[in-house]
Image (cartoon, rainbow, N blue to C red; front, side, top):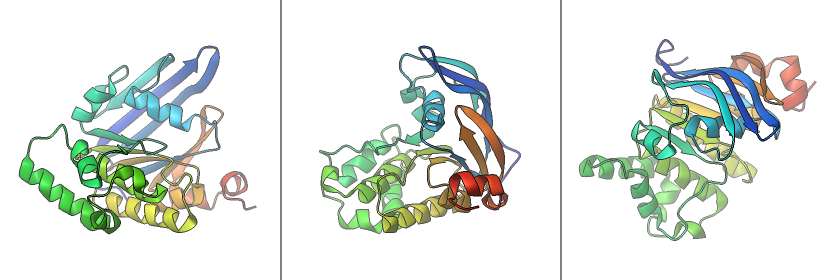
Length: 245
C-alpha cells in the first residue's frame, strides 16, 4: 500500500468544469495520498483529461468551481508555471517533447526550476539508468524518436523536476502493445521509488493492475472508487472497461 496513506498530497472536492454551456465535470471528489499510485479510468469524453487540466491550470476559457488542494494549499486558478515550482509535474497527452532539442537537452529543461548542478547531473544519470533506451540516444533530436521513446522522454523530463506529485495523462495512447507494457513497467518502477502519481488512462486493466486505488469516471461524474485490485474483479468494471462479463 502507500508509503504514508495519512499524508494528503491532492484533494479535490466538488470540482465542476464548464465549457460554455457544456458541463464537462459535474462535481467530483478525488484524493491522492503520499506514495500512492492512483488511477482515474473511464471512456473517451468522461472528463478525465479535463480534470487534470483543472488541477494544473491549463484550461482556457472555462469555468472551474469547487476546491483543489495540493500539499494542503488551495491551487485553483494557479498558473501552471507556478505549480512546477511547487513540484507538481504533468506529462500531457501527446507527450509534448521539444522536438528540435536533444534528449539530453529535454531532460535539462525538466530541471529548469533547479540550480543544483551536481544534483541535476546525478538525476540525468539516474533516469538514464531507468530509461536505457534514452541513454543510447542522448544526443539525438527528440523529434526523431518513436512515440514510445518520446513518452519515456516526457516522463523522464517531468521527473527531473523532483515532483511531489506526478500527473500522467494517457501515457499508453497510440503506442504498440510491447511499448505499452514497457511504459507501465516504468510507471511501476517510478511508483516503487515513492513518487506519488495520479494516472489518467484508457487501458483500465493495466492501470488498475499497477495502481493502489482507482476511480471510475463516466460523463463527468465519479461513479465508483476503491481498492484497485478489488475493482479489477468488480463485474461492472469488467463489463464496461475490461471487455469481460
